[in-house]
Amino acid sequence: MTGFMAPFKGARGTAQERAVRILFNKRHASLRNIIERTFGVLKKRFLILKGPMQNYMMATQNNIVLACMALHNFMREYVPNDAYFAEEEADIALADNINPFNPMPAAQGPDMSAAGIAEWNESRRAIADMMYYYQHQ
Image (tube, rainbow, N blue to C red; front, side, top):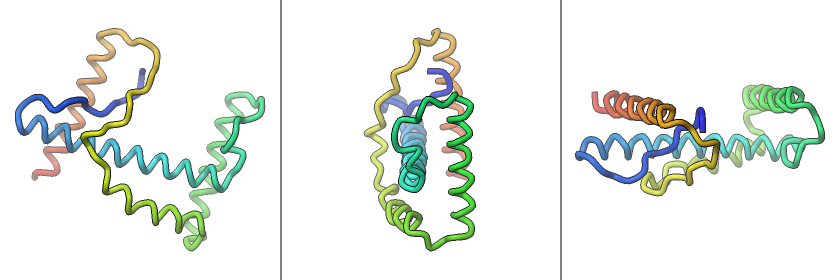
């Protein structure tokens, strides 16, 4: 789907191409893990985010999420010993144990054109190449 950058599948190519893909998948999974933990903390703290939102307009729903995130960030800065943050820090230790060969399932989204898919694949390859290049300098 537009805007979604999936991890690489399979391990074809040269040794360096495989290493590039493995590095990208590992960082992709690590980032996804951080995002999921962040939303988990937000849902625990702000119960309005936990269940289905009432019949608010989409703009109102977006503002509710943004307000919760702003409050979360404010509390992160000024209340560092908060119980929710302590729990989040304990979960961070698990993030390093992600298996890059077991990527998340692909999202089901609208069918894209071949040109759109090729463009996203090329963007993903460029990002992966830059990650590998900067790690090995």
